Length: 144
Image (cartoon, one colour):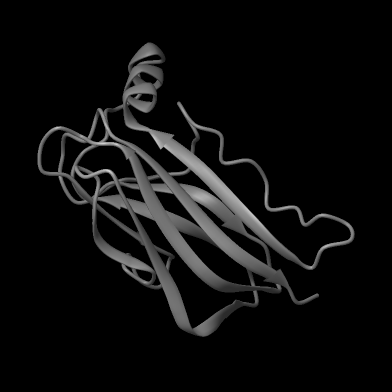
């Protein structure tokens, strides 16, 4: 398992809150074909099973209210991902199907507060996710 902090092939942006809005929606689109191409172009290792990508930074003093995912392009073969944080790979979603165009939202039963900040992580359950496009989103409150 390798934990990648780079954003080769996708834009994870920053976790900056809008000045007026204490509750924000952050999202990232993971186009696994673009990610594979960008990694290959710079000689970076291809993604493999159990590898993780840091996809959405969660600043210190934030509370995650909900996290969800949507597959907009199917993989074409068995492909699942997990969405979690550094505490657990499946804090928010476990075995989300990236081979079926669908929506799934994981509404957090109790909001999770991040006192020192963290990252939403996506873990590949299969070693050859290279076609799917998955949108990951989080509703985050600024508690500072």
